[in-house]
Length: 390
Image (cartoon, rainbow, N blue to C red):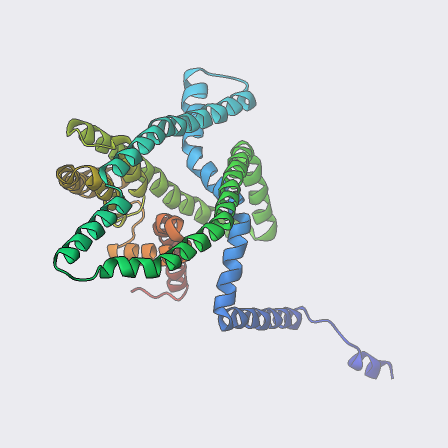
């Protein structure tokens, strides 16, 4: 009797329990993936909304990541190696403050020169273009006089008299809609300023607590995984950081040099709007391949209003400058930091720009390089386990 009871008694089997858990996990994961792809438009919209909500923190993370090399240089090379400081925490704060003051000061200096030049250029463009109303009315007057001399009715005056109420109604409707438009634009501007302010504050906190956060993440990885897998994952993160960071730092330095060279050459050639256009060229140069064209087109259009000859000079200058960047300066600074082929770079830029705009075009290449590295590493490990050589 006791033997039969023991046979029918439930016994936990860890092997089958693990299989059951994995099965349930795979089924749930499959259902989630199917649901996400079944309503792909809704999924993308949810992701965009989530990114919009988290944008101050994501921008803050990006700012902290971009500021890290300068902070690290000041703290390690200046305060520790040159000055041999002992109070590490205090001088780390000094490194962060000095780095942000340098960057924000440089931005303020650019705005100090750019904004007056922008106002001046708008005034020059507006003065160079005659009044559209006066020009149209002069044409109408000349045509009407010509029609009267030819003993023909003033059809143009009749047409204007018939359609003038419609034009006035359109102007009234536009003025009625302009107030909500101005309100929306003001709210968007306030939102952008607030998000940027929050992002800067977040980046400062992240820069200050970088070691604490990385240490906590490292402890969690070692607690969740075996020692071998944890070390492998940490090495992978380190390599991804090297790929991503080296590209961003190198591209930022390359774009800064191109912007300065553009300003120098525009000053030598006595081209107008040198500060404003050099800033545009330097910023857009962060985008591979398409960046030079994106930066050159607005510059050509702005200069064209003032002087067509100057616009031609600028177009030739930018073309030669971008050739120098593409064949000499860029390869020397960046080298082969990403390991991404040109066709893959085009793919990353187009896809990133389609879904995330200018930021996607800028970050598409380093993100693709990291993904390429991860896929390549996984492939090599799988082939090694299977003892396959390709």
